[in-house]
Length: 208
Length: 322
Image (cartoon, rainbow over all chains, first blue to last red; front, top):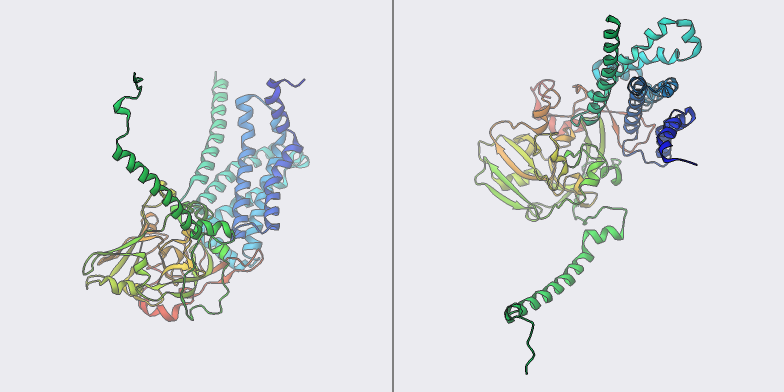
């Protein structure tokens, strides 16, 4: 019989189930496809797709970065198995984001794009973040982990820089109402602060 | 023996009160009938009868040659994608949050460097000159554009009525400041009320329009009801909405956007493909409603109205006075 007190444990188990998370993580994309098919992407569909994919790549980045703090705070490890998949969803939505810009917005007219990138810090900050994401996505597999060894960990620390750049990129877009970028900045700050705090504790322990 | 009444004399309603109460009930009943009758004619009823259009009244106007042949942006897009921070910072919010806004009754005051401060009711303002329909391109500083069939009267008609004195060099437009009706004003996004400004020659230019309607109807609330400014050769934010006051000044006014971001928004804000905004490219624009795979179009100098307005800016360094 199902006991009520087991519900949190069941939710936790299910939320660390890869198939469940995969399906959930695909929802923002399926929603866009649905809205596009029903002509409901607002009056400015390209901007809507750009904003939506940008939002979700940032959201998945925050989720990916929250797994370790969760382990440190609650001593749970099951969620760690989701890290690679969530990381790949960051890459998936970021790629859609860049595609929407390069393809839908600028129809691959590179001279226009280069002008836009050079003139607007918002764009080049985003572009640097995306470029840095490429090697991480390319090495998110067992073979690379084995081959790179200790360097793999070093390489993947770049994700912190990517996160900071991505939040700045969002912040620079917003005209006046900075509620959303500031929320992302606060979440990112907490996720990094928790890591630093535990690192600090561990260092103190070693010294003794 | 008479039974003792358990009603105290003080409980008995005096005749006068009793009668006035009946009168009140009668009047209230009549009032209900009257209001029901007006309801039949009201925008709310119109809205329930046809749900394709927002509650509105038809507005008669004379057609003009302005923008003839331009492909119009759909009514749906014009009324659902609005930068109107008084009703929320997301462009989908004004259409929802402005539903309960009351654009009537409405008066506009003219103040400052005028012969005499005075005010005019919106109904009287509509009679200052025949209403014209004009199709104008609207270019937003964010890099998108629309083509809108406005209804309104040239601003110079109101200026003539206002009788500015010789000190009047600029006009400042002040939008309504009412937190009750405009929920966005509870956030410190801008220094409320919204203000914008024009130089006298710009305000007197025949292109400058005081719009009171679009698509043959009175302005929907989210588009700046009941009265807004339309300056088609300038970026959209110059078009102050829900205007309550026009001040004639000697000094150049500082607009709301200039106050919060002077590096990004200048006083002139003329559409100019050669002067970039720090965030958005101004050389091209996206026309709303052209679909997912349409390409961007080239932005024209003064939004394509150079012939009518360029003469006002000869000798002015447009990259400095952006």
